[in-house]
Image (cartoon, rainbow, N blue to C red; front, side):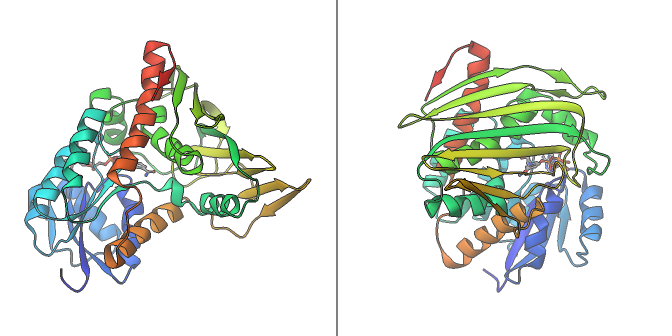
Length: 355
Ligand SMILES: NC(=O)c1ccc[n+]([C@@H]2O[C@H](COP(=O)([O-])OP(=O)(O)OC[C@H]3O[C@@H](n4cnc5c(N)ncnc54)[C@H](O)[C@@H]3O)[C@@H](O)[C@H]2O)c1
């Protein structure tokens, strides 16, 4: 490995803008390669990110794999290409960060888990919501015993309307509307991965999942898999749910997606609320604790959604430099994919899925 970790970005689409933040800022890393099927987009991104000396800008991912100055590959591609790209990067011996969901099907995920089991370089499945500072604060409070043992988690995800949201290219919307490319619906399966990861991080793996998933069409023709209600049963009589709603005229304050999330975790002696995710509804404190008969508001916490990407990437760079398991491992990511797939399966088959 060269003195700095050379980074190659595969897929310079919408979300790459948040992935490069830490790789640019961190003294241990340097972006040396950009690859996109739309190579002009990759060139534009290099300019926008202020990267003047990117050695390899290409439309062919094999160029990134062949480049010996690229140590680490960040895979930010549509879900149906995740497996192919990850196996190619492994064959080239790269350190890998693969965006969620690890693959579009469990069968593909099993192939990847087996391949990574025999791989001797760091391999991370990228998940950012569990690195969102208010979520980290809630986890700290629970570890300190503030609410006792968590008994239930309620996650509410709201898609809405925003005049300040970022532009999502039509191409990024198109592949998400084709289940053979995305693996499942845009809110329950794709974005839902983050919500199932949150449930997993606070409660562990579920025993059973049940769901109702309906459809609603946005004014521009984009079909959401909402409203949806997914219920979970965890070991030791603990429960949870994910409720997803699209409210076309609900104003969301955001510079990212017109979407926001709220989480409520109830324990034996207290309750924690996390009051935001992608965006903001008004100006509520990011974390509130109810315990001992009174509320405590935690306000001194960064709430920009980009922080979750920065901290997730920083954690991986630290693990690459100093050792330790990446978050997520492929086995953990496979469990979360199983969680999301069970929600889709339950709705399709009209029954509870026992895992
Ligand atoms: N963590 C999060 O919160 C979050 C948010 C959005 C997206 N994502 C994930 O990020 C990934 C990318 O999503 P996006 O919204 O940026 O999509 P996008 O469509 O904007 O970007 C994907 C890019 O990949 C390029 N591409 C497609 N096939 C290619 C190929 N064979 N070779 C090279 N380039 C190719 C496309 O041209 C496009 O620019 C997905 O896995 C998605 O689930 C995660």
